[in-house]
Image (cartoon, rainbow, N blue to C red):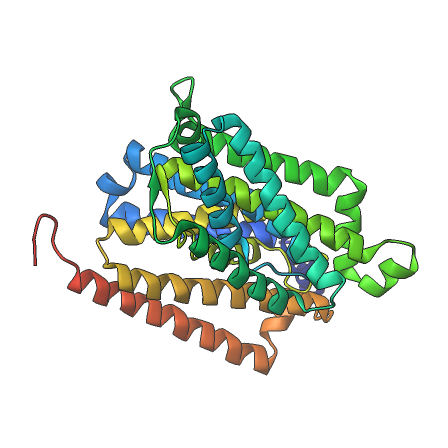
Length: 378
């Protein structure tokens, strides 16, 4: 019997880990998607896997796809945008008034919304690059500004009942089969992938995130490309605002309050590095699908809304912390995942992550126990 030397076996294992690690951004959310599917297959297979529910998951995910694509560019450049919910709401409010009070054609309003979102993203970029306000503070402040304008314009009104083109964007179907929002979302994802891999803007985005100083020294205009990324982010947030407008066939100033958290979480869970320089458009798509499946699973299990919020927050913290740890290991040159897990400090982090997972399991159990049975009233 031929035995393989231990050194060769360990080298093979290290080589396998090295080949897998670049795909962790995609494999991570895919594994979690499989776990959610397996869990729901045991506890609620009939309700969760019916065709109408699968369609609902895709429609929910499609709303976030354009923003996740653009946020991938922003985070890859070491930026962040906390204003996207307000950008979406303000864009939708303005075009809603244009259609309802001034009779603007719906197709014109779609382009106006994209332009408005782009302008708001441009303002964000200029605040950050020209006024030198940190991304976090600048976009948070602009979020307050845009939301304030939306509140002033709407004055508490709920605008509803829009032309068929708008509802088609939010909940229509192409050829009676393909949901229009899903097609729009996938087109933006494909466009973002092409932009990232085949254009100077994409290559400069990765270079800026990897080392802004070195990029500046080689002649790359770091500030200009940051403005480009935020402008793209604003336009995609406005597109999402139009999709939400069509989905609900209504809009108010407080619409889209959690867009920023959901999108940032999806992008980071999908493997885009918080430290810049390592994007993953495919991972962002997987992250969006993962979060939509998770929220839908909580609804299907009849867990009350407040417990849904708690469970969603725990999952987001756990996922983002795990990926941030993996990406910090790469940034610091820490070697393979196995070597990183051997570190005593990292073992403590792993134990903390397992505690979070245990808390989530307890929350699932408590929420399921307190859930109101179908058809029952208080």
